[in-house]
Length: 267
Image (cartoon, rainbow, N blue to C red):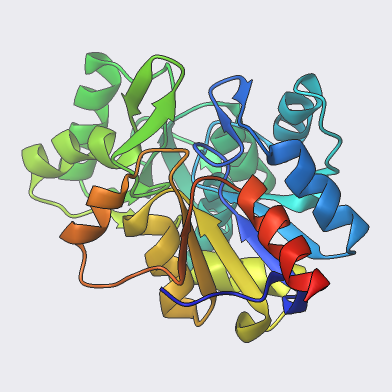
């Protein structure tokens, strides 16, 4: 592993689930990390594959944990999905399975809801997923609708363990129809390039921080960023053995970034 000079980096793109919190529980060192980002005037963005929340809801969620982070610091896979559809097919119709974050993003991008003959079936995470919605989505795809997944996460950390995420929820539709979904969230380069553009930062000057090798680390690696795998989420050191690529650094959590930056600053 190589060492990152965190003090010299201008921008930080950070995952949320498993990095900032588990469910509604803030993780150790997070408050210190965000304070350090603000004190050092770093550009930062929380880039999350969770499609269920709007940026306002994410701000409120962190607020309940004692953190004050403005809305402009959040970008979700729901926003990335909506931006993709707006670019590809302005004014398209969709059948969406997901929560407010996904539905609001689609509405704001000019998409209309249609459960009869939509242009797209869009799947995120959420409580609206059921056998009925799964059956409806399957038959709409068989009828010609294109299949879109908000992100390719198979699972995500929660207080009691893990929960199936978007990739796992899309899989039955793919298997039943023989149609492969297109995923808009990490590690899709479109989402990463948007993140860097929002930071106004070159990839060489930025760090990607996450708890997953298959979305966070690979997305940073392929975009030319330094990468940090934190072990506060779904990954362990044994996880590294199953991948051909490596993060720049492996840390227990984001609090270690502050410690390393301050130790480096003293030298």
